Length: 121
Image (cartoon, rainbow, N blue to C red):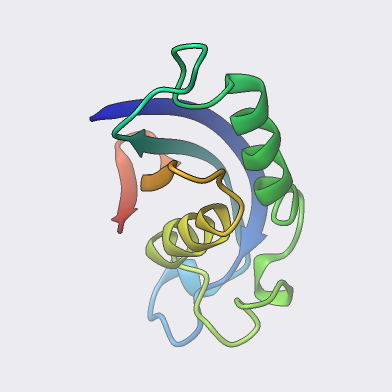
């Protein structure tokens, strides 16, 4: 099994609905995102997928959240924009765009140094 790793980041604000504490108030994070893709096979060039293509797909996905108030971005208009839900959302969105034979392995969203959530399929 081969695995590619691409890291990116985005900045956004959110508030956690029904949370009792500071995170119920409007606040922001500089999220670090770790995307891992896997494949059993390499293409004819010996790659899982061209890193340029993976970075483009990840950028398109993250641009939907970057510098936004997440509570106004679907599905977070109804789904609480927790780090766990952000990781799952990014995983699901990325999985829809991957080339044949390449699968999303996991997406980890770090909301701060030492605090993150990973979703894997």
